[in-house]
Image (cartoon, rainbow, N blue to C red; front, side, top):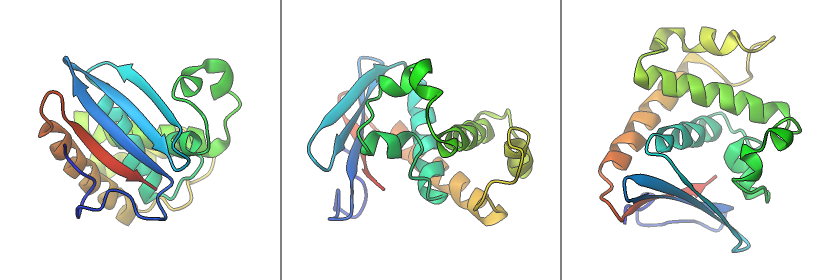
Length: 164
């Protein structure tokens, strides 16, 4: 199993544990909240990149109402895939999606790194608070590091991360 770093999986401040496992050419996202409740879902082979982009973007920009924050607060993964629920989410959830998509775009070549902030700005009326050149560099570095860790995970093993 690939741990969250430093041998400590979750400190007393951690509200959730995230586990992304490789299973039969697919992956399973499992989130275990501080109260012990669990939400999980199977997903296709490419979704770990998007999940990891959310993780990095939401942590670096301190977004607590994004995908993982909503799960930590009790939403299920299935609820967050439901268009009716998605329409009710706060603005920060939409911002987290925009930043995660843009971060993923820098990895797959659809967004140039130097155009990150401008690309996010195309989907927002006003600038996103906290999105600076320094934050972008940090997100890109952390995303690349997490992708490398994910690619090192063997079939049947998992990448585990603390939230927040």
